[in-house]
Length: 138
Image (cartoon, rainbow, N blue to C red; front, side, top):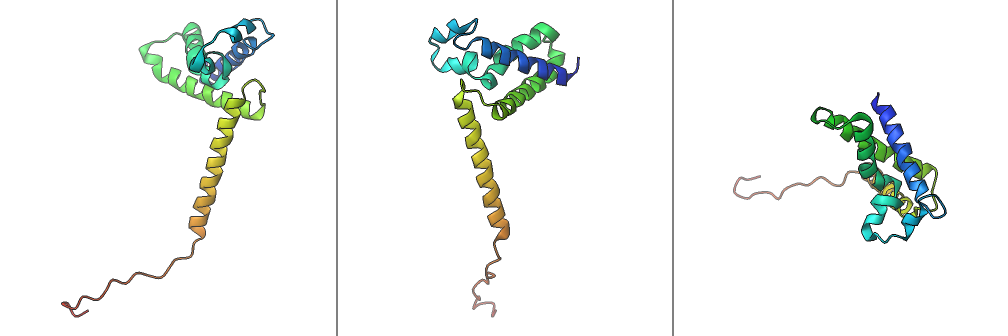
């Protein structure tokens, strides 16, 4: 099975797990469990959930072996990216934190682009001429 297929399957499975753990859904009881900082990677953030659930899904479907570790890393990273893009395109009212973080990243990249453009647009200043050295007669 191709890597793109694996990325898509893992991404959709993680979104399905995330959806079923929302209040009013079949595993909504999970919202009542206090997890503290672990609530994002275990149930509240589809992007944060990928390394955990994605690894289990990958190991179950394709097996983890030392010869396929590089494929596993690529699939997990691409699934993270796909979930981040999907959350940006289709906002989920249940996970406002990730949208805020993605928005901040986008704002920072835009600011960096504007800074780089301002640097490119700068006119060269006066050339620096070192002071004359009296010993060399310059």
